Image (tube, rainbow, N blue to C red; front, side, top):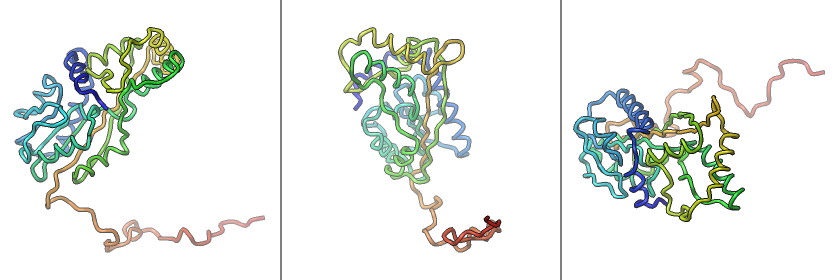
Length: 276
C-alpha cells in the first residue's frame, strides 16, 4: 500500500526541470499514439500529479489531480490520459474504471506509467545489501506491474479493444548516489506505507553501491538503471466498434486462405528415409 500523504510530499519536492526526461519520453510516445489514432479530440482530460509538465500537452485539456478519487465528471470527455501516476495507485483498476466512466461512448483512454523492469537493478542491489548488513528485507522499491497482466486491467475496467505495450530505456549514472538524487528529483522515492521508518545505517548504502557497481556496470565505470514505461490503450464501448467473431463462426478454412495443406498432428509421422 502507498502512503498517499508521503507520496504527496515526495511529489511536492520534485524537480522535474532537472529530472523530467522520462516525462518527456512519455509525452513523445503518447503523441505518436495519438497521431496513429488519427482522430480529433475536443474535450480531453489529463490525470496528473505534475501539471507543470502536462498542462501544455493538449490545448484546452482539463487537468485532474492524481488522487484516489478523481475529480472528473462522468461522460464529459472524449479522451482521458492518465499520466505517470498509475504505478502509485493503491487501486489501479478503480482508477481506470473512474477514467472509463468519465469518457463518452467511443472515447479513448491512454495511460503511461512505470512498470516491468523499472529499477530492477536498484531493487536487487538494495535487497542483497540489506540481507548482508541488517539480516532481513524491508520494502524499498514499489512493486511494478508486469506487461502480460496490464491488458487485463483494461478488460476488468470494461474497456473495448484493450492494448498494453511498453518501451524500455537504460540510463547510466555515475554512481548510486547520483541515481538516488535523480529519483528524488522525479518524486519517485519510497512512499510505501510499510517502508522502514527508522534511520538507515550508512553501511547499507555503502554496500549497495558496491553491489550495484559490480553487478550492473555501464561504460566508463558508471552504473546502469532500467526504466520501463508501460502504455495502456482502451476505448469506451460503442456499438460501432469491431467485435470479435464468435468461436466456430468462421466461414472459410485458414489452410485455404494460406493455400497450404492441412494435416493431423495426431497421425503417424511419414517416414522420409530408411532406418538401418
